[in-house]
Image (cartoon, rainbow, N blue to C red; front, top):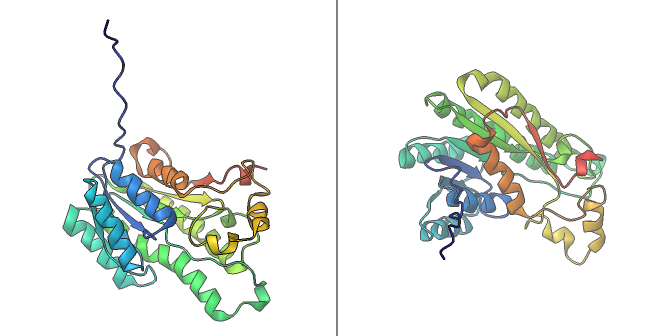
Length: 263
């Protein structure tokens, strides 16, 4: 007797959409690139590491996804413009953006940091997000469907976490930019949200973890779930925000932190 089993559900939450992802050569950005492509999006990938970025785009295309690599630095308005222009030329528009590129450090106290360290953290995290939104929003304003933007902030965007002071200030600023943009462009059909990300196992963090289990214990001490996030877990939250499933969510500070901010 044949069983009438349900067909497995295939989610295509971003079918037919074009999404720009920054910081896409590794970590959360790379995980998002793969996931968004699997969910039907054409992805425009931006990061400074050209070889890794192009390798990822090629792998996505090899899996029948749609991807283009546009190497660049979010601190450069011209580089961001090139990525947005490529999205429009290659795929006809820009439906969503995941502004994920970031930079941070541990260690030095506020009074011991030099100006170069301050400038790097503020320029990548704050100016980078500003550069991206300034060029993404005009495209979305010209589309009948508007668009959606997700900016990567951090638990350091609402609390002092032990990271360096400029990083904490920068991630507060990312949340501020997110809320300002959500308020300004909501009537035009553009949603803007921030991910408040907890400690995540990325290449950027690995040098601090290597041979130092006490670092991981400290990073997860306050969280309800006593572990680091996997990049794909953060990418899943970004996917939801970029999709129509989050159609009534804007101006949000969405915690992806294993309960760190709940206790």
